Image 1 (tube, rainbow, N blue to C red):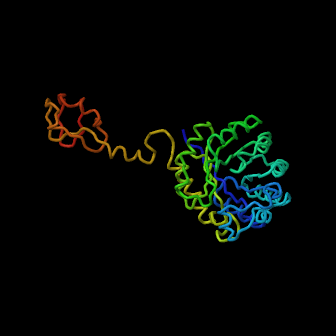
Image 2 (image 1 turned 120 degrees about the horizontal axis):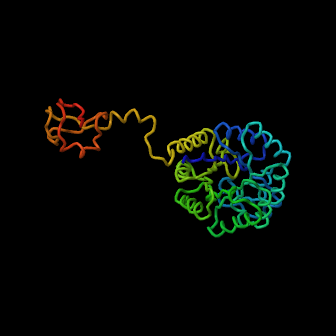
Image 3 (image 1 turned 45 degrees about the vertical axis):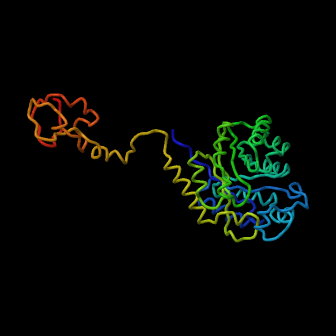
Length: 337
């Protein structure tokens, strides 16, 4: 059975910096690199965060200043008209639009725009009313599980299924919400644990630096890989520093596809390219010395040598001890006829 292609999500998130033209350039990067989805973050700041909520440590570090989440998120908000243009541009570029809504108003906006592929952000895994409403209309659901315990993930999945989501349409994504994620915090085996525990497709939302984590995740069976992209890691914004620039992301996708290729299938058999080596690398039973008719084949007068073509060396015991029915010269294939 051949492994299905890994879905690659290019996460633009808020790296458009509130600029629709920058968003389009990032969509171009995602398409050129070979990503399957391009993902945004849809939110109404007033519905998402209280005005005095502090930015997280990594947000403060990447922004280079101490500010509230409300202040910097408000600048990154996109309008309904912006999303209409972005969705249309994705259709033009033949890449699937995906978004993570962070509030009910934004969820309903996506549904109104006929977007039914929804990514649940890690912070929404305990947002009951949000999960309940999402489950009623969403078709394909990706659920990130950063900061979550197994029981919290299980509870969220049960809420989704109870309210109309189909199990086969849910993919659970292991991730870590500190940007960039340290390798010691990745814990990829948790992805496999969730895959087995919930009998769902599993993947990894990658916030590490480099390519190793994605390669390892795909080798472990990840069905989805998500990665933030940016035009320039030095741009102002909360996520640019932990994102991949175009050249690096192109290579990232290529390495994932190469990993899929080298994984192959579960079937053990010689490939077409190595069949030509089989005859020259395997051995036949041949005459070690000149053998006269009537002599008994033994280790003294027979030996196994390349190439294949006579009696295979695997049948040594069926030859040794038998009487030669004709003469053989050194290196002749031995025959029992």
